Image (cartoon, rainbow, N blue to C red):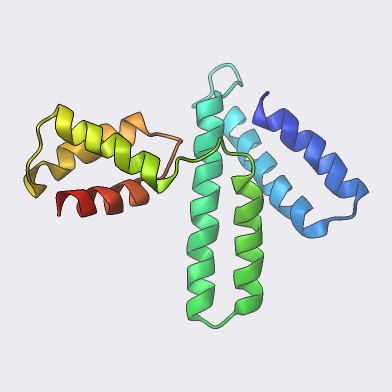
Length: 150
């Protein structure tokens, strides 16, 4: 089922249950999806599931970065708000791979391409980023790959 349809239903539910914080987060997702649909990138006013997931991942990243900035400024009230919204956004992404699953995938790539050193980091990182798109973030891939390469 399309994320936008699920979000519409969740917005109605949040309104009925008077969940103000959740409603703010859901409206942020809805606004970003509508912007994407009306942009030049969406030719037929339709965006794919992959594009919807990319938009939500971008929102999560923005919220987490904002939370870090607020944390540095000792604004705990805003930190919790940003992290709450990021948590709401994460509910609309497909299940993410565990670190063990990512490690197993990377080990497979290392064996397949006969990688022996750090010099091939970029090559494997590029392949893994494409293959694991939407299943994890590049930061996690990079950390695990650096550990494997040593």
